[in-house]
Length: 142
Image (cartoon, rainbow, N blue to C red; front, side, top):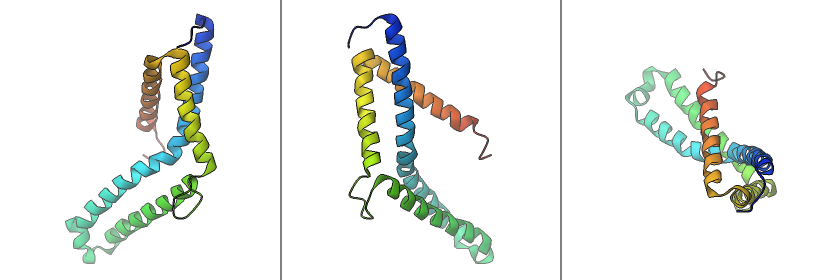
């Protein structure tokens, strides 16, 4: 860790927190879908195994909701793959995604260099707390 004056360290910390936050949010806009999709598949499996779905001959509308959810998952996967990859086989990473990944690694290294390992952990915890707070306080999906 490099030695800098308190005032400079405070300014550097704020700048690095801003860099961390903005870059992590951009990455999370892509990465979160890859964590959501397995959960969605699990939920879909549970719905399809439910008594209500299996007996949905009498409740076509219910089965339609489940089928719509399946289509939603497929569309979600196609849309996020287009943000992360340049090819349909999902082998070549998109240059913007590559840049964001490398920038985030560099920001974490800069935090450790200027502020130390403990500060990186604190910043990560602050970010997670903020994101969970946003989710819990969101009113748009209620």
